[in-house]
Length: 455
Ligand code: BGC
Image (cartoon, rainbow, N blue to C red):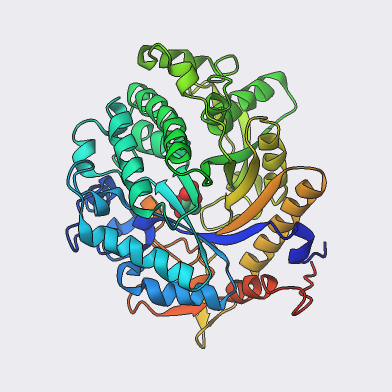
């Protein structure tokens, strides 16, 4: 497929995404409080080789260089997150002026260079002081989070128009409170369901706060999603895939859309009941200006008797002999097209924006260059699928690459590299990869240069 940036229309937002804990470092500097990720990744045995985000990409000191690089690559929109415990060390109460100053500098620097800042309010790094009180499992989180959102809007709202409430609630509640493989490392269904319900309430409440305090702002929230297919064309596998789809793709967006939780297709969600209070159903709904679709792969699902809560298992990509990334995720570009169609069917959101898409491949540095053909191809093919969906009437209005630089990939540490820009974590040297130059060229106006990409 051949396409140019102009095929997406002038109002289409192109950008890159990052998250505070994955890039900033400066974990204990200038009055910052600890987050659950500071504690988790510094606990033995929790992450790959015990790696942590204490320094990460040292964005805390190198933000100006990195944002200038973004500008050189013609990237017009930058999505980053605020570390809650950097600006309010305990999660509530006294603010940290140095932390606020840091985000002010990022915002001002972006604006000076003509880059539009998009702020994610929560990308998984809960203040540790709040986790000590139960974190997302404590319903009080609605008050803590609301105060935090109000504080951010008061502090940064005069210069920032685009706001994202949560990053992927399914992942931080599922991996962090059910499986225990992400911070805070809690396990079990009760922890998960409590955390999930409170996160679903916070995403809507956050949306209401931003809209009421900042008229004219554009507010959304993001969802992880995977295209789900049944392993065999058999009733048991098809039903299993419907359950997994309800859990991974529908559980957080449907209450926001005013449809309630997808209990009909996933009975285990009946167990949310003890956490649901009078009036919650309407509180869960909010008509976001946009939904952030975050997609990387598809999952193939079969029935299984080994997993009684969901009676389903995922058939790993490795077992299916398909091309995979370093994350062992299948490369399957059509998945993003399918997910955009799926999310487009929810009626009460104004538009969709792909707030994350990208891939980790084993990059090699030769002569100070990284020739990452696979990532280039991955991005090119996924963007083509976004265009296909758009041409079929899907209301998608933006695409953000995950991620700008290589970074700390949570429990997987520094091994998976997702960046358009390579980072040497010993020296902090940056090298723009071929995919970075490719994206930069693509983002140049077609009037200046007719950037035509061929398969
Ligand atoms: C998250 C990112 C993460 C990326 C790749 C998303 O789930 O928002 O923080 O690095 O996927 O795994």
